[in-house]
Image (cartoon, rainbow, N blue to C red; front, top):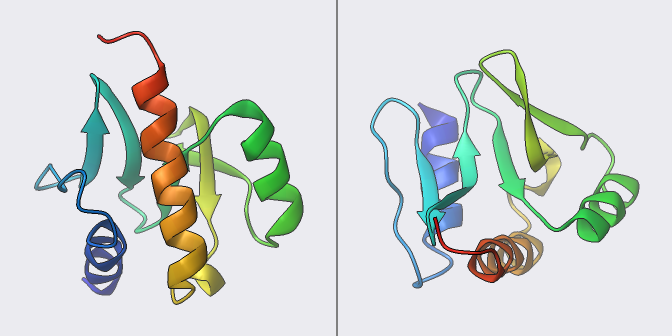
Length: 106
């Protein structure tokens, strides 16, 4: 699966966490998931509200992230044209991690 390889390469940009899940790869910290590869092979990052808005306005092709016919709260869809933009992805990956670490632990 090509997108699984892409997802894994994105997650490897940050040493603070590891990918989990076999059938549905994800990352989690502090009791919250913050990245996800859905069944359609799309990648989503969980971001703070203000950053979601900026991300969706800045990157064409972004929008809500849907998994199992449900819109994932606080997630943005990572458009495919960003898959090779390692600096941008690393920035938002760290932001997603920091966001869930700022939430009360589950």
